[in-house]
Image (tube, rainbow, N blue to C red; front, top):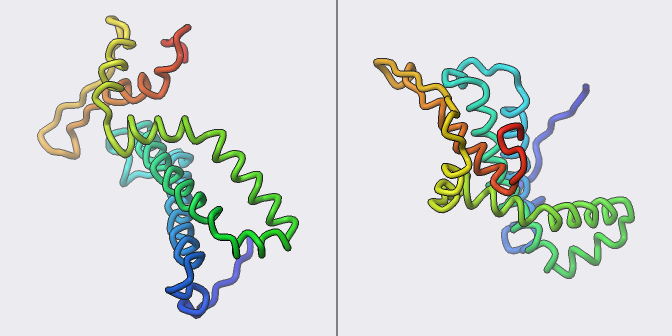
Length: 177
């Protein structure tokens, strides 16, 4: 895969008094955050981050991606209010269609993203954890790794709590999900 790199005139590309520039600057940062989070989820191994297991790392990056997606949607909602941007966008049919498709996808997923962000990422919601603990069957067993340093002590069982929250809407066959 080929790419090119060049220096850009930042103030020219992102004039500080242009409201669209501010939103685009935010979206640029969030794009890079989401890219790293998706990479962190998909890699088989990231040795420096996997002392507690690759499952924990994947869930960590997934949880953070919900915060990022929530922020992307907020910025995108502000962008939808910028009439000049929408006017210019309408002159670009391919970009306009991609914009509408993205808006539709974000609108459809907003409730789920908000729930996951508020219960497991941006906040660790007390009620969500209470409900999750009620869903976990009495015979469920998970790992605790006790060591004599932070690097060798891990609450691997904590993934069970997050899984129960992620799947809290499921009522049938919770254990298999």
